Amino acid sequence: MKFILNYIRKEVWSPYVAGILLGLVGIAAVWISNSLLGASGAFEDLAGLIGRAAAPKLFDNMYFNFIMPPGITTSVILVLGIFFGGMIGAATSGTLKWGKKDSANSDEQWKRVFGNQTWKRWGIAFIGAIILEYAAGIAGGCTSGLAISGGMLLAPSAFLFIAGMFASGIVTALIIYRNRY
Amino acid sequence: MNFIVALILGIFFGFSLNKAGLTKYNKIVNVFRFTDMAVLQFMMTALVVAMSGLFALRGLGLITFPTVPATYVVGNIVGGLIFGVGMAMSGYCPGTCAAGAGEGKLDYIFPGLLGFLTGAVIYGLTYQQVFPAISAIANYGSTTIPDLWNLSPLLTVVFFALMSFMLFYLIDRAGWQRKGNL
Image (tube, rainbow over all chains, first blue to last red; front, side, top):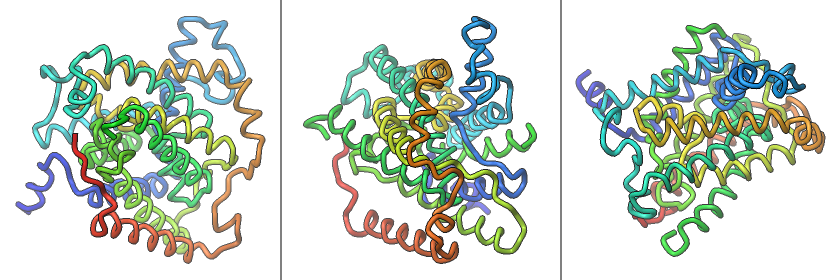
């Protein structure tokens, strides 16, 4: 019991132990409610909601009317759960960053390679995030909704997506890190 | 899925992402540098556990599968290729960013969550010009590898598990993980 509690308090687990937990969550999603985990869809639902309020005409299109009708969907609640799950995980290891000085540019490796400027981190991350969400739309899901959820059902799409993701991730890292790769 | 189930599943999901270390920029980017393979180990373990459980439960008649994410070869690959660029730039994906935001990291909360919303708006507004065309190429619909190639699901899962264990061995014991901490 003490061992388990101490393990839970560790900041980083063995990826195998954490992976088993995620696998069980994936099974539970199907068993309990015949549905799949996913994260990128929630942002589509929220974007539609915000867009409808700000510019109803523009967002009155095929996509937001039929493909991804906006609203507070179960996907949105799932992502809210992920948010709290991350919070609880960090709380158990005492590594919460709320209100901490380094919370704006949170990674030591980033700072060593690219410097301390927060705007640089935010600018590159913002563009990266736009790319991620757009790509998830084209592929039919992100790492959770397609790679994990599709892969566990042995969907070919998941493995095509994972192959593409690693290929371009490696090339992009090579370009960004150059001689420090 | 009702809201309470979704919230609880999400909490365990986010917790596992945090404990795997995936809410850190360096963990994500270093898998592409082959200096820390945790992302791959985590994903493959989750896949082996989940597919074993799900195919066993289906074999026992306890569950049916939900709609399988559709396969349209070019779209899945091109989407993956674009996705990898964003991942290496930002050091997150939508799920890990949400978990990192919960930890209180401002570089996850602002550029991350706002970036996803911006990307979602751009996608929603250009959907009609992009998606129908790309998803029409080599579209196999909702299918699985055993169904598509007429394989035994059991053997496919066993094969995938063995491949994963071999990969874990190569990473942990045969030096596939480079040294190169920055």
